[in-house]
Length: 188
Image (cartoon, rainbow, N blue to C red; front, top):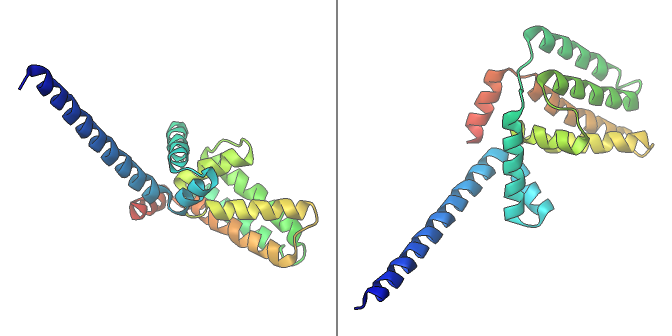
């Protein structure tokens, strides 16, 4: 055979090997993102309408999060916030709407103290999704109900559900660093 045929065969083989390696890398990336983000992965794929775009967005969230200085709360801060939550929850019976607004403010205070940037809601929820993918949907739902409440369009049951949703995120935000590391290990 002529040398040029061997060159073409070698180039074709190299292209096949590169395509297989690229495909394997994409599958590993998809599996890793799905494991890390859980149901947030599926929500993002649905929202984006394209798996590649969704995975790029999730990877961008992860990279942004790596640059943030997110830290656990001190024991004193956890104690103080826990007491504040009890107070907000106790007022729910008398004024559910005000309690939901206070719960939203309290969750944002905890996020701020933990080091999360307090940009617009979409960015806050994207940042939270990296560390707390199992409850970010609760945060979105609670925020939506809170917004509906501000416009007089949320009933008492809606407000109760918002409190439950806020509580799930609040509990995770108050957890210690060891608790969060255990959650991440279990997610893997």
